Image 1 (spheres, rainbow, N blue to C red):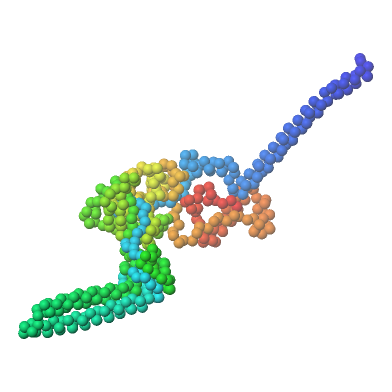
Image 2 (image 1 turned 45 degrees about the vertical axis):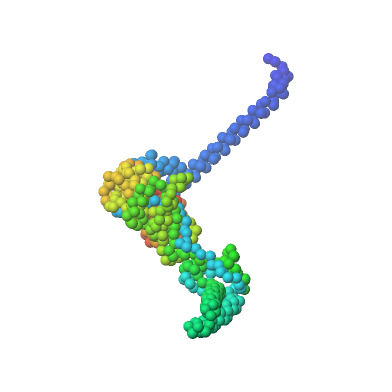
Length: 481
């Protein structure tokens, strides 16, 4: 047996040699143990939170995951019923139309300019008004033109008096010539003087007419009927025929024309109808395709195809009785080429990737292939094995598969009251004794109690919806308390 001193010497020597390593190992084990405890606490908290949510009637994480997989078309349980909206299969006339982009152009445009120079003394129009051809628009100071007219009128009166005197002398000379009392040369000279004065009088009358015309130009009238633009000259301005902007511009907008282009491949459908004088209806829509601006017919076809775009320009005329169309206005054009009589149609929203879902009598849907044709508004012409009056799904297509069960929900009518949202259950509104009783209930009893309270609230509120709208997934129709 070793002496006590040597027994205690080795442990002390070992601790001094390996002490730092031993301390580091203890730190690592302590950190690992702390992380395990923290993970256990977090996991327990998450389990407790999910349990509390499940006890109140809300779906847990696994339930929500299963519900999410079921909402997609490929993996939901066959017994799940999907809420959908449906439309009816009908037979009706469908218009075959082509869409284009065009711009409006005035039937005629006139810039009102002064024909004589002078000061504007009167303005008789209001900007933007509709005027008739010949209506008085403005006046120029007429005094200088009245003076010029007076001068030529005076010269005409003088020359006409000389002409009348020369004619009288010629008549006397001819009487004396018959009596051989005057030479023939004198008679001929007088006759030449009469003809000279007749020419002078004719020139004076032409000068008078010109002066009267210049005076009439001081009254500025509308050359065409149409809508006035903005005023380009004010009273007191000196205007002249060389002014570029003139006084005002008039555009004829009743009727008005629209110019647009269509592909050259449509010519075989357009030219026969134009040759036979059959009207080609045209509709104009605004930029957002929400409001129809006017209806008209094709009036002319261009004489050449644009080789750069492979299209041809078409002009259509519109009455524009309400004045909603303006020159240079952008419009969306719908040109009607033909009408399909008594063709099978479905709502346009029912088509998905070349097929529709047909609702059968047993509440399931059948995947039906269709061949789509022209669309007219919200109706689409199809070729398919469908009978008139059948129902096809129009909303909720992304959650369906062949043979799935559906619950048909009537769409909300236009102008109806909005669907009320499900209200959250608030236990704080209950009396204290009821809250205490609710706290002691099991999760199943608590869910039944909450369901009964919701049913009572729905019965007392007429605005509470009976079912969730078709656009809301089935799992969202039941709100959490």
